[in-house]
Image (cartoon, rainbow, N blue to C red):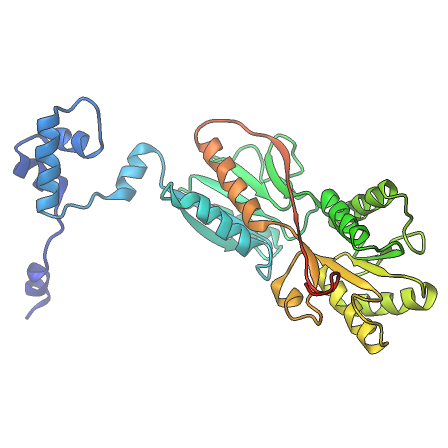
Length: 344
């Protein structure tokens, strides 16, 4: 069989013209009936719908969207190299978009400004209806500008332009929740090991922790936060220092789960029981670290899926013409495990 014969043998997809001919109406009337327009007689609508069903007519949704000025797609532009933040944010956004029949294109700029601009042009070339921009940390990032042809919502890392719409985790409150939990479990001599002080997340979590300590009438063990790096190696080094200088410490709050894993290593090596003698907790609730720890690690979850859902809601608002600007903080949540509570 030749290519021509093969093509002729393949069934042709039903078209709007086929529906209109079978129903005995014009193409314009068939289109109005299929799209639920009000100015179509009920009997005519019934004939059109029955005709469409008889020949298995499927409308070209992309063509419909373009004619309507929308394509039903959103671009998610991320700088999160390993997906720790962007993937759960993507899941939350897709869950919110599901009912609206919208799809998400994911592009990783890898913290490269040139690559980001390349992906931005590609997404705009696909005529996305909006953008969600995910940062690699919670420090403010450069705005994509006011000349974008579509609305943009910034998630995790806020835009440095207050006129933009940004949705971020409430790291200050996260620090407060952590201290409140440790105090509730009877801890009174709490040390705090965190990451790079240049990062907003480290400073904000420390500010929230200090405020909660003050409300509880306590002071931080050692008098200051031990800032360093976001690594297990720093967690080990800092924990050795804490135990040598503050033998009475009964809890260590760590600025990330990675730091906390390092702290747990040292406590185990030095024969300190967790949580009976010293409680340990972290931030981010990164499952690969929390569930693999011994004991399993109590952590503050940044609620990334909720963050993604709210970003998607703000996208819907923007597409509907509702202007939302400024930075919106989303609540974090405590996940209790065995490193702070016996039997957890």
